[in-house]
Length: 68
Image (cartoon, rainbow, N blue to C red; front, side, top):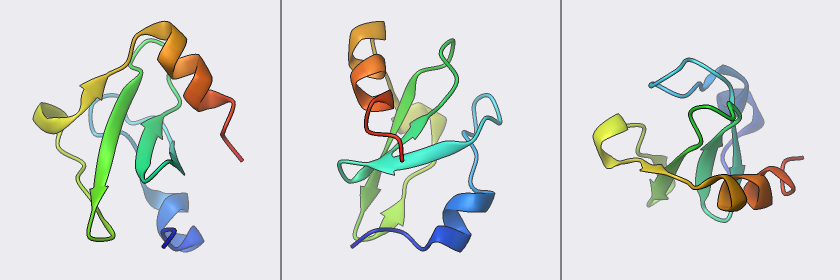
């Protein structure tokens, strides 16, 4: 189930404070220098930097293509 649009409007990457977007049951930072992926578990975003994954540029670009 997707996150509420109102929630997505206020969420930012905790590492760089850039907006995030939802795709593939995860949140993706839109900053090309940061490139973090945050999981969503049981409909709850896990916005912990230590638990995020830094994507390589190819994977990040692929995720960005899914941005609404």
